[in-house]
Amino acid sequence: MSEHIISYTVLRIREGGLGRYKQLAEEIVRLVEAKNPRMIALSLVINEAGTEARSVQVHPDSESFEFHMGLAASQMQEAMDYIEVLEFEVLGTPTDSLRAKFEAFDEPQRYWPLFAGFARSPTS
Image (tube, rainbow, N blue to C red):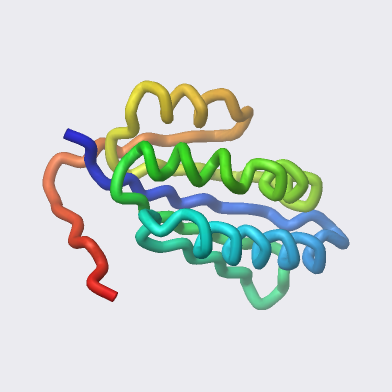
């Protein structure tokens, strides 16, 4: 049985990169909201100094996460010119396919397998 997957990413915004990073992040949000209705939540926050950001994604399963990665691939690739991933954590147990995609990136990663919990589908 597939389980919900949550990612938590800590980012450093490169000097001079805040403006373009914000534009790309807003593009990603619009794209994903319109084209990935299965994604439960996507939240991006930036500290007041504009030097660090956090991303939280909540997916109903690994398949939704993989679809998201393909959908926003070009924007995410460009965003890497303006940010550095300091930490990437996955809460839940991704499929082997999704974990392989995560591990293809050269960034610090930690995995936290779900041992108890549940997820409700949004009713909006």
